[in-house]
Image (cartoon, rainbow, N blue to C red):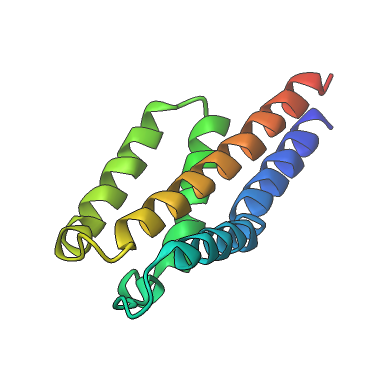
Length: 132
């Protein structure tokens, strides 16, 4: 019975980290964009950072799965690999758009995703520790 509960908690944690993290991150990004738009000068060139950072939804789902999985497996060094892969994968895009708000959107989205996945995984580790 212990094994069944462990499997159920792990599956639930991975699903919650990956699934609920997408609307949370999207909401935080909308909030950040709205705050940034209020501070911009009229007539300033508007760049669609979401279009430049295509694939962000799927990348976010995969990164949250990886971060939560690393914590659940007690392998926090794996998170460094996830960070490195994402940073290297987006480096050229971020370098080519230095003043458009793309790097800020990348950072806000990434940090929101990582914090959400880590919180869910740490909570799941706590639940797993409470299973007799």
